[in-house]
Length: 125
Length: 342
Image 1 (cartoon, helix red, strand yellow):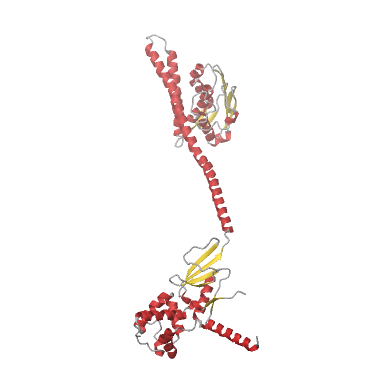
Image 2 (spheres, rainbow over the protein chains, first blue to last red):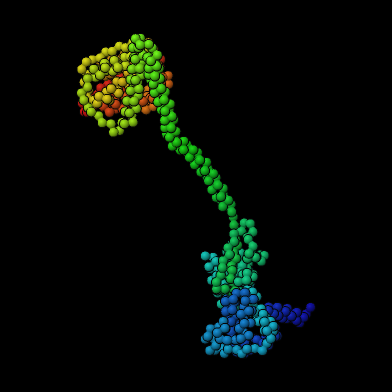
C-alpha cells in the first residue's frame, strides 16, 4: 500500500468521523425550509428561546403544546419572550401550515435542540 | 449541600451554549434528572433508573424537587450505597435497652407497689383483727352479766347471790375498762389533762382493790411493796390508765394460781407476773398499737400502747423484761426532771 492510498483512506476516515459527529446538528430539510432558514436570516437566538421554554415547561410534550398554541395565534402576550424582545425582533405572522404539519415541525424543532443530545458523562480518569 | 451544588451546576449548564454539556457528578453517589412528566432526561446510573421505584437494598435514595427547571429537570434522583450495619446495631441496642428497661421497671414497679400497698394492707388487717377482738372482748363480760342475772332470777328468794353479783361486778368493770381504753385512744388528740398532785401509793392500792375480784377469780397470789406518799404531778385519768393497764395485763396473761408482785417507791413502779411471757424478739415492738405478743388471751393489743403514750407524755422511762413461760416485769421509772417540768 503506497502513500497515496494511505492518504485516501485517512481522508475517508476523517470525513466519516466528521459526518458522525455533526450528524445530529444537521437539521432535516422540512425544518430547515419552514423554520430555521428564516430564523437564521433574522438572526433569531433559537437557543435562547428553547432554553426559556425548557425552563418553564420542562418536558418535551408540554413545550410542544405551548409552542403549537403560540404559533397558531402568535401574540406578544402569549409569547414566552419578554416585551423587549419584540423591539428587536418583530412578531411573526401566523403561518399557513396545517395543524398536523405545524405540530410535526414543532416536534422536529424540539428534537433538533433537545438538551439530551448535548449531555455527556465525563470520561473517567 | 451536595444537591445544592449540583443544582447550581445544572444552572450553569442550562445557560451554556456549548455543543457538549458535561453532566455534573455527585461524589460517591449516582444521580439522574427527570422532567416534570417524570421522564428520564439524563444521569450517571449504570442502568437507567425509574423515579417511582424504591431503591434497591443497601441503597439510600433522595428525591429532590427542582424549580426552576434547569435543563428541563423537575426532579433530581440521588442514590448512594448505604451501610446499615451501624443502624442495625443501633436498632438492636435500642431493642435490648427497651426490653431491659421494661423488665427493670416491671420489677421496680412490682416491689414499689408492694412497698406502697403494704401499709394499707397492714392497716386493713389491723382493722379486721380489731373488730374480731372487740367482738370477743365485749362478748365475754356481757355473757357473764346476762348468765348471772338469769341465775339470780332462777334462784329462789333468800338464797345467797353474792357470787353471782361479784361476777356481774367483775364483768361490768371489765366493760368499763374497755370503754375507757377505747375512748382514750379515739379521743386522744383533743384530750384535756388536768395536772394534779397525785398520791401514787394511794392510787395503786385502790386499783389493786379494784381488780381484787379478778385476781381472786384467777387465784393469784398478790404481793405488794408500796411506799406511801409517792407524789407525782399527773392527770388522774392518765395515772389510772397507767396502773390499770399494767395490772390488767399482769392478771390477764398470768397463769391460774400464779403470782403478781407490785412494787412502788419514789423511784419506780414495778409490776411483775408469772405468766406466759413475751418472746425476746417482740419486746422491742410490744408498745405499738394492736401489737400482741401472743394470742393466748383476748385483748386489743392496746394496753401497753396506752401505757407507752402516758409514759412518753410525762417523760418517764419504760422497760419490759420478760421470759417466755416464766413471766414479765414492767418497770416505770419516774423521771424526776421530766416530772417537775410538767
